[in-house]
Amino acid sequence: MNMKRLLLAIAAAFVITYSTDFLVHGLWLRPDYLAAQSLWRPAEEMRTFEHWVTLAQLIAVTTFVILWAKGFAGRGIVMGIVFGLLVGMSQHVWAIVNYVAMPVPGALAAKWFLAGVAEAVVLGIVTSLIYKPRGTSEP
Image 1 (cartoon, rainbow, N blue to C red):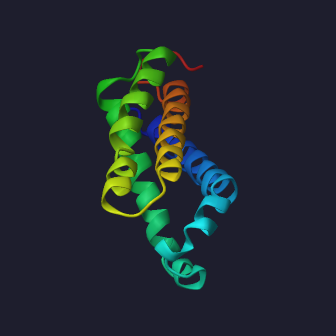
Image 2: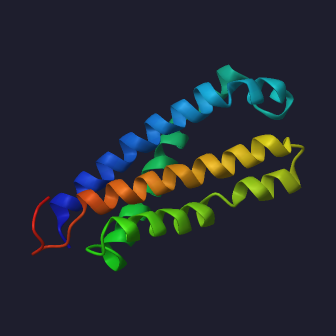
């Protein structure tokens, strides 16, 4: 395994995830969250749990990149898109389950799912461009 490229891909995936999550949840979905605010913890209380979100993101991107490195690396950007799509659908199916189990608006659940899958596709593209197995030429 190419450890330098692995760590670089994990770092890039973390930055992308953190950034896109801010854009999606902090900006785009803000009105949806305000409309359903009875479902969430108060903002001050949520801030006390931010470190858990950061840890969850780190675990998710590390798992994503290692899975790529172990079974898909070196197969090109199209495989990165397919990998991201499949992992994204698998990883974000929780949005559909939450819609069934909680009084979450359907539009919000759909946005969670679609945004998560789109983010995973971007991660697949970036990971395919950054992580190269040992012995392959550098980009």
